[in-house]
Amino acid sequence: MVLELPKRWGKNSEFEGGKSTVNCSTTPVAERLFTSSTSLTLKHAAWYPSEMLDPHIVLLTSDNVIRIYSLREPQTPTKVIILSEAEEESLMLNKGRAYTASLGETAVAFDFGPLAAVPKNIFGQKGKDEVVAYPLYILYENGETFLTYVSLLYSCRNIGKLLGPLPMHPAAEDNYGYDACAILCLPCVPNILVIATESGMLYHCVVLEGEEEDDQTSEKSWDSRADLIPSLYVFECVELELALKLASGEEDPFDSDFSCPIKLHRDPKCPSRYHCTHEAGVHSVGLTWIHKLHKFLGSGKFVMTLGPPRSSRIIYLRGV
View (cartoon, rainbow, N blue to C red):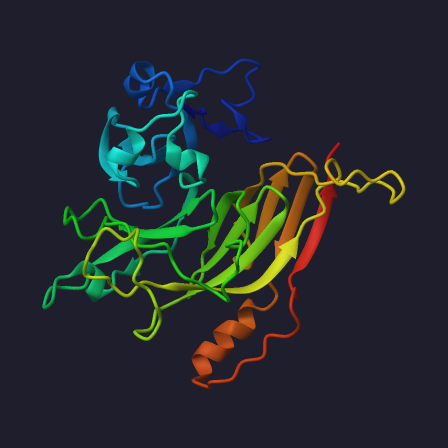
């Protein structure tokens, strides 16, 4: 459901000039889809970033499908991106969840990166004009990140194919956690991803082009041509203090770990800063090393020193 608020005007810029009661218009989105599939749940929703088109909303549902709806036709998706094979999703557990969900192999969040030129090896059209699209980063619960390029102006199927999982460097045995819950792409080039887990860990990853010598042949890539895909370089890890720990004498190893879903929000005024909201309050995180990264990329040098690990600044606003 999309709620449209009335305009503000007047001395204090209040809704409809300060009326005590205002009328709002609502637009139900994908109502038939959710009514006909009662077990279907909404995992994540966001606006399509283009300002040139009519408003579009992007929905990620529990069946591992991303659907893009125009508010002009809110019941019929403009574009559908399937994130898993239908044969896998047809094997349902007793509680209605797919086997892939029990293994954490379902998408939980996504975010768009800034508009960029689609690599020719991914687009697969030599000699054609440059194609621009929005990179869409899709996070799975098991910590894996996939990539696809989305453009509502082009109908070529190659733009929307799924790539990944994106290699992460340095590699970790636990894939940097099995409880991933949110992803955010900061509006900068190269793209910087923030991956959050329910245990309060934040991973800052720089997205760089893949190299031919990297082992990027993924079993989950649907294209047998094994395109070169970007890699995620984990620059630093930040741990949020989500709750006060118990005293050492009373600490219970099973109850001391506090976890809760985290939501990530861009800062509209500062591209190198973002905010985390959760049950324990609000954290604001500033990536102080981004300007050094941009300076390094513009210098053409091959050695870069970004300072000690965990150099980002964190401000905590405690919840009431």
